[in-house]
Image (cartoon, rainbow, N blue to C red; front, side, top):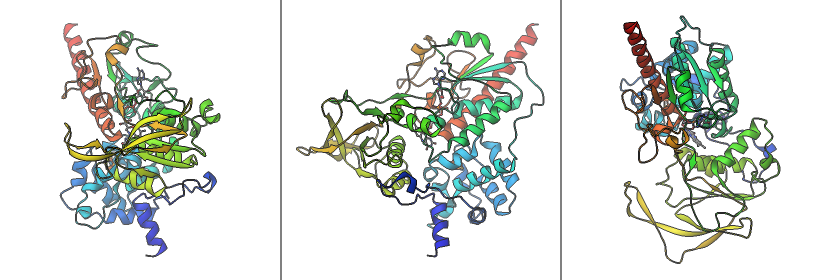
Amino acid sequence: MTEKMLKFVTVGLQTPNKRKVNSRVDDFKEIYDEFIHDKAKEQSSRCSQCGVPFCQVHCPLHNNIPDWLKLTAEGRLQEASELAHSTNNMPEVCGRICPQDRLCEGNCVIEQSGHGTVTIGSVEKYITDTAWEKGWIKPIKIKKEINQSIGIVGAGPAGLACAEELRKLGYKVTIYDRYDRAGGLLIYGIPNFKLEKFVVERRTKLLKESGIEFKQNIEIGKNLSLEELKKRHDAILIATGVYKPKEINLEGHNLKNIFPAMEFLTASNRKGLGDKVKDFDNGTLNAENKNVVVIGGGDTAMDCVRTAVRQNAKSVKCLYRRDKVNMPGSAREVYNAEEEGVEFIWLSNPKKFLGSEKIKSVLVEKMQLQGLDSSGRKKPVPVANSDFEIKADIAIKALGFDPEDLPKLFNNSKLTVSKWGTIKINLKSMETDIPGIFAAGDIVRGASLVVWAIRDGREAALSIKKYLENQQANKTKAA
Ligand SMILES: Cc1cc2nc3c(=O)[nH]c(=O)nc-3n(C[C@H](O)[C@H](O)[C@H](O)COP(=O)(O)OP(=O)(O)OC[C@H]3O[C@@H](n4cnc5c(N)ncnc54)[C@H](O)[C@@H]3O)c2cc1C
Ligand code: SF4
């Protein structure tokens, strides 16, 4: 294979450069090369326009993929960008971080016939990045202002997508968020090497320039009540995401240097954004020269191991109680982590954190898979007398997230939740049990994906529009 071809394959599949775990950060050439123009065209022209667009069906936004691939192949990038934006509020974000192997690309007909998928995500990123560079993406121009307002709680992808759609229609929109920056998990959860922060910031800047008001550092339920919010706005969207880390209550869990994943990732993202982070600067949350053990097998665990690699950890190990085939995370993420030198210890379960004051090691038992659990997945059971120890200077718990107790936080028992704590909505209207209050994103679905949050935000906007039109019609009738 020629060097040119190799680069093509590497770029197309978004494969990272190989790197030793303990090589210096300065030596680290960032993982994704530019998806160069002619390669995007070449990839786009591989689309067979098969007439059965499984890629489109399996994209949660039903993006018109075959058409924007065709436009790209013809060099009509501005039109391709407009088409991509007609169904997606952040195509450049999805192009970067959707698990395409499970969505559009995994269902590409060319992939199914064994010839390798068209790299849809990379083309989507390329189209939109080009549109930004060329200045084709402009703030929303409102044809007619509507004198009704919507308060959105949460500036993650669900809240942002809903805000943009409502603003396009002319409504006044205010977004409240407890963080100091907008973007939700796009800004403080997902690492910079997967999603560069300027990509998120230029989107939120555009929304501000479009007339959407952002109120940061305001936590609903603490700084402002839901009741007060209802008085201020004609409709409300709750898009607060899920943030309560799932716990493992093992012996030794109180030892120092055992962190929840979000604490570790947020510190790293804040550093990347130029913030002073005391616990990073004093070394506590910095993996440099340390033996790091990450517990969990999902995408958050993959983000932690790959962040630790980039912080020049001495060793990075990932403990997962099932095997590779049964791992919940994206296969591509696992592949990337392995390439970067992360050691996976499959079929292993932490039993105890060991150390005095600070963690020194994790006691682990071997597992085997037997039968199926209640969710239909293979059930891990311990292997007798199989304990072993793994050295750890830092342990990171990445076992997933549950919703916070929103009825309690919002002091409103009328806000009903499912047995998992997610907000209950009418699936058609996305309205909660409180009239005029809608909900979208992870707080409804449980921990999910950005692309689903965007879809929910868009659908909520349509329902809110209908609700507000009815309210207006009723007022007019009554007058
Ligand atoms: C580490 C990590 C990596 C991930 N990687 C990927 C990936 O690669 N690809 C992918 O598709 N998905 C990924 N996800 C999932 C994805 O980030 C989420 O599904 C998505 O962000 C959910 O969007 P959301 O708008 O519902 O919530 P969020 O993005 O969580 O945003 C919710 C916002 O609400 C705010 N908020 C919460 N409570 C309040 C309150 N009371 N008052 C005011 N504001 C409040 C929060 O501050 C936050 O800004 C990842 C998740 C994590 C944790
Ligand atoms: S939004 Fe995600 S699933 Fe849809 S086409 Fe883009 S990368 Fe694929």
